[in-house]
Amino acid sequence: MQTDNIKRLRQNSPLIHNITNIVVANYVANGLLSMGCSPIMSNAIEEMDELPAICQALVINIGTLTSEQVKSMIKAGKSANKNNIPVVLDPVGVGATSFRKQTVQTLLKEIKFDLIRGNAGEIAHLAQVNWKAKGVDAGSGEANFSQIAKDVALKYDCIVSISGEIDYISDGLKVAKIDNGTTLFPKITGSGCLLSAVCGAFLTLGENSFELTVSACTSYAIAGQIVKEQLNDNQTGQFYIALLDSLAKLDDTTVEKYAKISFE
Ligand SMILES: Nc1ncnc2c1ncn2[C@@H]1O[C@H](COP(=O)(O)OP(=O)(O)OP(=O)(O)O)[C@@H](O)[C@H]1O
Ligand SMILES: Cc1ncsc1CCO
Ligand SMILES: [Mg+2]
Image (cartoon, rainbow, N blue to C red; front, side, top):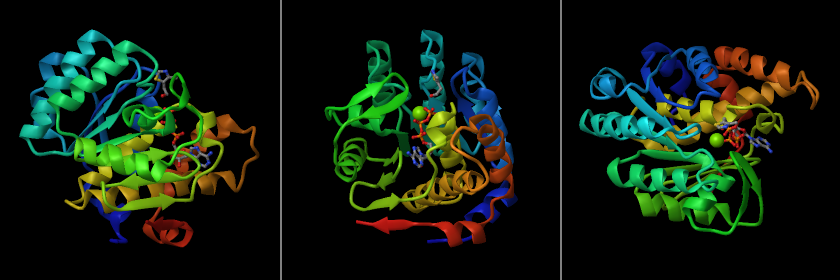
């Protein structure tokens, strides 16, 4: 695995196009800036051909869908595919409503995604596995996430990343398990949405999407883990802000020191 990804990301400073939800747009933009990238948040159908042509990655997040936005997502996704830039899908709360389910099916049909990144509830839904999700939250249940990650990766011919206490990443054959992070992550909003954008940024670094996704998820989880060393379980507001500082400070040497990755 390449060990200079963060350095290269800060050097390259890719421009990342985000079609994201109204809850997290500002936080995601700040998080990308902390990683040395440039964000642009846009939904306007009039720009969806041009923007992917000048950006290095596209991240589509369905958190607060509107029917107008769905049209923009499809147009941008097609332009991104044509322009050969990586495309990430964050299927926020996909199991919650028919509109979300139908939209994700349409997006997966119309757009070739490089990565689907979601929490346990979202990816379990895509795998048609029984799981009790709760809106946009991961929810609870018993499932084999290595197998789910593999199955969904094979089904949609892309990388799949499932976040949680352990992150599971698969390309359909290999599975990486990342045992980093902190329980403060699910106590703030946008932790996964920002992770999806960070994954999009890492995917600009090369063709090895599986390794780059593992690297992105490990780095991000470690940024949070380091913050938690100074906080107690109730300091959710501090964590929200300090995560941005930690992402801004993060380097490859620190990630190498903290990383707890195993492969199946
Ligand atoms: N219980 C946990 N312990 C340690 N780390 C966790 C835990 N839950 C989530 N994380 C970490 O939090 C980060 C974001 O993942 P999370 O599962 O919270 O995303 P999400 O549910 O999609 O978030 P959101 O939809 O609110 O943006 C990942 O780096 C993941 O490793
Ligand atoms: C809370 C919330 N509702 C829709 S999107 C979102 C952000 C976290 O996924
Ligand atoms: Mg999410």
